Image (cartoon, rainbow, N blue to C red; front, side):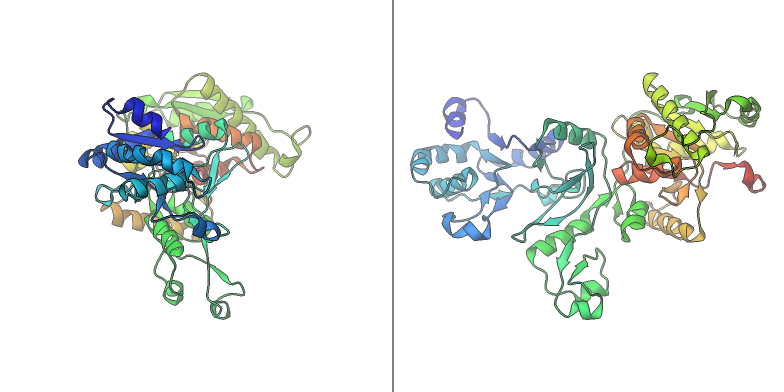
Length: 493
């Protein structure tokens, strides 16, 4: 391959060549940025990628004089390739092993004393451009919640969150072993999804278990707590894991803390692609056939707003007879609502709805509903992703908070967000304790995800879908203060 690139393309005008494994996914936007911000500033000399030294058990026989670029993907400059070409025949006839990546590393060193440089440019915000990833799949083959894992030889492998826009900003994901996996990952990258993170486990000293636990492992604390202070001297892998957690971001820090017990920084909001407007909302009121009066009441209550309401008939009360066995733990009303939502979402897909606002038939809007809703939608953090093709997520216009303890996490979320953005936030991050489908705006990108959850997800009430979407990496937020309330809270209006 390298012979062909040199011999046939020597005078083609290319300055850099990028070799990628067939099971590697490349973010071309990140690659374009890397080329613009880094490669064009240097001559066509270099051998760039993720430096490696081989696995410990075979390192001695690899013949390495320095780091090689791991074979999943690396970049070579034209001048470096020209020098390499002079030695390729000798290197091919005198290999140390059958590993192509280590042999190219050896040959580069022989030709020009060149070793692999990490493909990074901290000055430009691009770090660890080429990273092996470890991730979990859900039942549909999509990337699910991620983990930093430790291989048998002790190497910690970063996961795909570095690729999805965290400060690590990787260019490449490896390995993906199927076309379906490639398509699914591309879809997630395109939608800027950032699923919740799992903590890495790190070996603790023998005395640690006597102080804190009966196990010899402990979770890496991303903050400087007493556990960090008492931890042993960290190896390079542990430092990498700890640094990664500190630099990482997720779309929903509240859900992250609710699920794992620790908080990670919130990712930058997705900017809107077109102006926010109430006319962009396709609004439906969910109502049972025999409760036409409820719909008429909602129409009257929203008469002072600019929303154009449509009625969508709900599925009447169902029993568990004839339904999948997994749903038999749900009440008849819960089963009916799930069936109604499945019909509604399918209708939204079939009719090409972009933004779907669903209203319960017992909600009451506040007097300044229009102006308050527009204010939230025009806020980049709360509504920007809804008005973006590459964004998505949901925005609850009100919620039922399940407990006083739940409010503590919400207050923490609001306070930390205020410190970050420097002003009072107009929404907080939704999570499992912020339930209630009183009024919710769904971006089209969430329709199929929610349908899949109804079809193949856990047998849970419909309200749990918000936590599911948060875990998958969608932006899920709640307008605050609430823009409308249920009838039961009419005294608060």
